Image 1 (cartoon, rainbow, N blue to C red):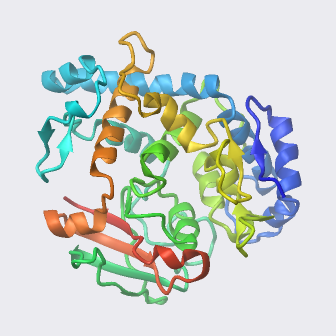
Image 2 (cartoon, rainbow, N blue to C red; image 1 turned 90 degrees about the horizontal axis):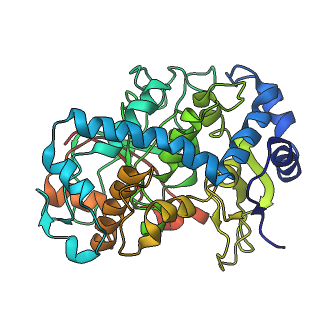
Length: 380
């Protein structure tokens, strides 16, 4: 069985036909789900197709990201930070010999970016209703109309948590009758998290995330957030019936899986998120059925474009995405230099204190190797 392949420059109708073939029960399942709270359940599949087709068109995505670059440029000027502005404008991408300074945790960096990119991304996400900015409980604006209890295998720890020497946090099972207050903000994922955590916490409740643990430097820790920034800022706007936050949350529903297997050895499934946002690169040789793509439906392709595929060369100053490309390249160099960077251990070693940590407990099957993967909200 060959893997699914997302072709470039698709239109809405073509992508809709592809989704109907890959997820033959999707339309029926969305319409039958009485707990689903979105503007129009019947139009969800068309919204998925609109987004999938958009991400397959690199020119349109790059144009939308030019809005992000303009915002970055504004923030650089407004911050009156001459050192940062100079470091960005002078960047030439000459390689790891530019890792010439250290941050307060002793990590090698090219220069401090003062969370410029992440803060601009989060501001736009929050404006669209992501990341629990309304500070509600777990049932606040959840995708369904039931008091949400996370999932049956969730573990949680709150307060000034510190990981032990193995990078693990002391967690306890979530009390279904008294769930913890839903965290506010963007969590850091310490590795590729378990499927239930990904579906039932991140997507279901509208959290974007910082993703340093996924796929090494080629995946990119901000790339999914860049995909959604482009979705939110496309001009003219995408023709979506449902709100972006509703579409995002709906993919945390368990019916968002296809009948397509994940791999020859796996009993798992290919999920809608993987088809739209998380394809493998087209030349992937893994014995895996999950979708391949040479488009920006694959985060590696977008990261590669924004970082010159990791080559030691910066963008020309005339590049319409110059600031974004510099910031992404600086980040990629840092991650490559740190290599086996482990956020949870780093918190313990460097004094970071988490406010809330969530993790799927007793992970087994396809998630057995993810027992050290945590969702961490931290305050320092």
